[in-house]
Image 1 (cartoon, rainbow, N blue to C red):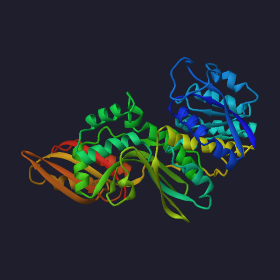
Image 2: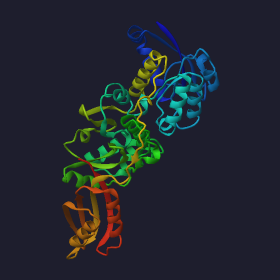
Image 3: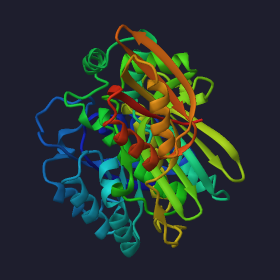
Length: 422
């Protein structure tokens, strides 16, 4: 039986969940893993604050250095969130040879490479399973069960807030702003929902997941990001008529030495497994060259699902005293980050209802190498809605075509452009 003294940085939702799991499964962990894990210190902002879990006041501290400088603390688990001071504390712990477990997607996305190097220097371990998709064990699966594969591509729903909003809009025909307020009332969305609805949360997670899947560092600046604020109930209605659903997808693809990583609203066929993922659930659909298609599904947030991933990492860290580094096995090839990817596109525009308009617009698409797969026209008095689904086209060709159309007198406005994945 190995005794482990654990220091926690933060005792919010995730930290409280970790304490609950450690307590309720303590005997099982002792029997099956040979580990007696004890929380020695907990960093908090206010010792007098009422907690979601009972805890001995003597282990609470407002000074991180108490934890970082305690030679008996074997392992540090960070749940503070945000970039600072979390990054500084994690880095200092690694420098001192203490392994670190974290759920902090922002720190890992922005500074993961720096932290991995600090861990390698000191012989400590850095573990971050809970930083992507909460309780879904996706990182360990890729690192430990899919090593024999080249991951060719993946698509994921990795933000529960946006999936809840799009689910309600799709099933109830509700307006975006109304559903957002409901999500905030239920606690699914923060008072400031920017990180979720603008895709930033998913961008952090996609950077991490792409790095692991493709064995190459995928920096945030190479991840395209677009949120769901422009998706309307009208777009969802047309999507359903055309046989699609709309999801905010994190998409990663690797072809040779070219990598594309993008977050944006996406049309996917109603028959695709990701289309059935509702409300706050997460899912990741990936393709390996040997294993073929796999899908992982579960809760992407919440105290206990996230704590499940964190405690698993704590156990792994305790058993790997030499340190387990996610950078191990990274390819050293020079990669090109693709910005001119190939996709199909949904475009909705308002046009003046007069002869020759459709031909004129089709000509503008064709001028830029974009061919049309299907067209729907909905008359609205003196004007009409035109809805297009294109064949595969390069992103830059599509952007240029839509830019060119701004000077077309037949077009009143271009209302939407959403990418289509099949």
